[in-house]
Length: 137
Length: 359
Image (cartoon, rainbow over the protein chains, first blue to last red):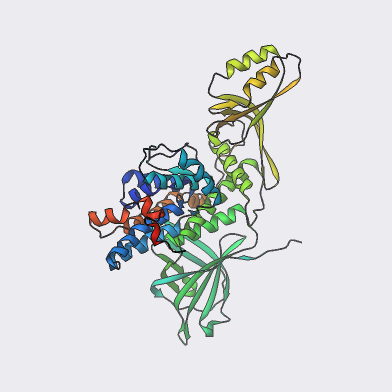
């Protein structure tokens, strides 16, 4: 997990992979989030792209099966509460401009998901945040 | 004559868990106290009662105020029924009111409120009023998190105040530049050596000389450059001097380096402006002469509140972790994989069959 420059006050966003690892209770992510909270007294932020990706999982399942069962609905409520507790950075005009610059310059053989990561990075940059990610591109 | 500004904060409703003694004997609040214990955080607070408003007791409302310190009070509103045996509490809400915003007052208040909000249950006892109940506050995680941020800011301000011997009037809204100054000063006082974002340029003026051009060319081969500076920060309109600071610009570069060299080589003593920047936006500061925090500066009760930090952090992170884990609770590994699979970029952003697009 990359945390960018090691500065005590750097605000970070979690990219989607790190949020997912947190939901899976991956110990290194749980520890890193606890360390971050103890320094900044806030959770890392999320981008609106990650909110989209996270809710997409539930909506995709609901669209396929008609509706979500009660258990999955409870899970969805939990992630909505977690998102509600975080600062969510919007993909705004500045982010769109940065993404327009970054994405055409990415290597041609990258996985398609990297384009979403490009939007997440652009959003973080537009709002002056660093990114907590395990991507190596 | 001083003007007292009363600032009220929104009350937070509490859910009563159990009532051991709910009767309020209506009596003047002389030498009475409100005792609050938060077992899972190890916090115990004893606040002197300052006011008891029973004017609406017939309507089922009693307001008890207790001093957090000389500037602020905790306001406990009891809702219930009144009969011949006394007042029977059914609901409770907690709020705070402040006369003057000071770092210490706001720190005490934020700690108390965060502790009550993060407690699995809180016991509230006022022996003189025969009140003894357990409750739990219903505060949102986002609000608790922001309260912890306020608590941290106020603690840092207290450190700056004690180290510099200056007391600040804390504005209701702290501007971004002041927040940055608080953080920088806090790290300077408590750590003295630390990294900090550096996005701007350091401007250094040199008299043009051929020798200097040679020295600058040699120095430019090193990735970092260190400069002694006389440094200060402005906080709430006051200048806080930090003395001589050694600032090292990490992964530095000099703007228009070739032009700078050419100007220096003119060797005519004219001033050449050199702009030094960091490629990665980072500088390291050594602030050896920053003000120092005196030893034994905190009173015992303040020390107790400061030491609650680790428990408050752990309690809020535990709630966050529980929510994150709950978002996949009860699902099989296949279901988890399906829920967390990232959308295909085509599916998420593109219309695969243009003929289905309707304008």
